[in-house]
Image (cartoon, rainbow, N blue to C red; front, side, top):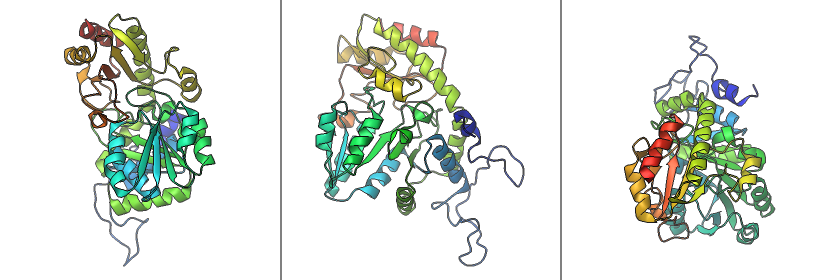
Length: 379
């Protein structure tokens, strides 16, 4: 099985051998009967450590990202926490993009920094600055989001991998915005892929989760140890919902991308808009890099208002088909004000986002309805 959509439907998801059910069963159990003391049946003992439904999801995600192993968690931040506590120790440093997700920055700056792990925000476009910031012996992680949240910046994964590896550093790529359907960072040299599976992988705004995918088996073993030891795993029902959603990821991303492209082009011509941030536009500063490493450009669009913050707030409040809400990646379209909502934790920091910025998660509705809603909201 080599095709993405074929793997999304079948990888790790053979029909149930007991009944022939084509959908893998959901194993709602906490514990497992042992075949004698210490005799685990197929390795199952306790569902924090392993659960067949979660294992099926992990197998599918590893296949879609072309990794050797995947681990799933109760949230994206739980996944990030396990990763960073596995590879970092007091005195180490994390170099991260200067427009990283506010929750990631909060975890690093408010939780890990008091533990003795430093961090340095850097413009990932400035490769000389990245090289200067990544210090051999102390920098354990170069953290990259591409496309980034919410400024839709694009980082050159292959080049960043070369810089990181020259210093003995891991390149971690948050692939949440693109999904593995549009971009597979491990094939470009990344060491770890991070997902908030809440977003496009879940796709229906009904399940929270996170994932790590790696190429190196030894790193996978270390991460799996803390996954079990810390225990922030996703339950079998959440895993089952994600497996359901993976089957339609490709067709959903096609529609998200097509709708977002139409909307970005429309916003570009609107008199109230000062800038449109979308990697699919030729005007985007890293459009060529995006075209090289992505198959399409995704469903996220951000734009800035000429009239400033108050105008941005009014657009968010007037939208009707676009729902005013945090999160992203669902089939329904969402609108939000990052400065006051998802990225409020970055206020006053080097990662603060512009106050006149509006972020759209473009859903799969009829695009003409979405354009009409934006027209009245901007009017």
